[in-house]
Amino acid sequence: MRSPSRADPRGERGSATAELAVAMPAVLLVLAACLGMLQIAAQQVRYSDAAAVGARSLARGESVAVASERALLVSGPARFSPSTKGEFVCATLTGRGVPVLTSALGIELSASSCALAGGL
Image: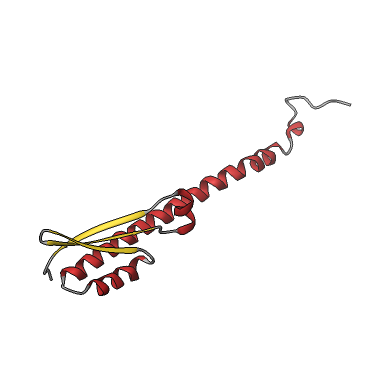
């Protein structure tokens, strides 16, 4: 009876499966991190859009309550803060975005937008 040699492929049977089983948790962790960061980036875009909606509403002369309501419809839960900078009215939204990810990482998302007061 012959012992398997290095040149004999039968001696390494199943090694690819074992290597895949060892590497799979790392691959899944990287994939989960990428998907989480994508969710955070998407929420940041929503905050930017919502801040622009709020600033435009304020620039048209609408109340802070109406501007806040419109902005929060776009962004979801967040803090709405109006301000003025010269002839511009600005809106800032701040929040956690995706609570599980941002709380675990300690990330707070924020976006600001300004519009010319009295604009159309």
